[in-house]
Length: 226
Image (tube, rainbow, N blue to C red):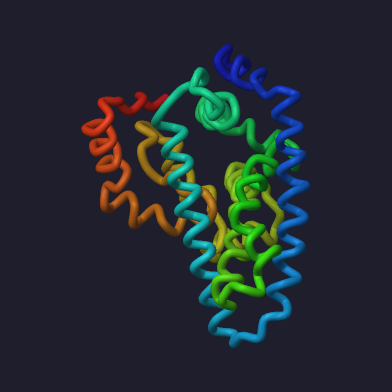
């Protein structure tokens, strides 16, 4: 392991671990509440499948936007986000296999906290939401919560057999699809939930265009890739 990888790994603090436990606890409560709500929904199979597919695409898009943002902008000294999120992404590029050594809490705690934003409305005021919205938000919350787990499996040499089946079916990020991101110059294939959105975002040069707009407006320059 390189000195930089060691330094970044050592940035994983006890307070961050507590944050991750809190994320898992809050997400668990909200996801259970949201699930109980949607199980009472009377909707056709087409509505359920439509909400599921849209939620998977949405979670994949969110993963790509977050991945690109934390790879491209800021640094470890960025207030709040530097140590909370950017460190993790920078460490992953220096040592891609490190994620396979993370336990369940370190792998999923951060994303679980983000999923609370999606699951909480359904859990608390789901009765006031349209059925499709409740289904979409609940499914999206699950996929956002476990995006890093799907990312981890894409880096494992021998993921669980059922996971490998989902990867081959295109329902989970596959090692082959994700390997593109870890090839120089690391400027594509940012989406790490299913990988569905990578084709659209990469072929339209979405991220490069976004970088040019941000630079023109703010004067900031994208960080050079590792």
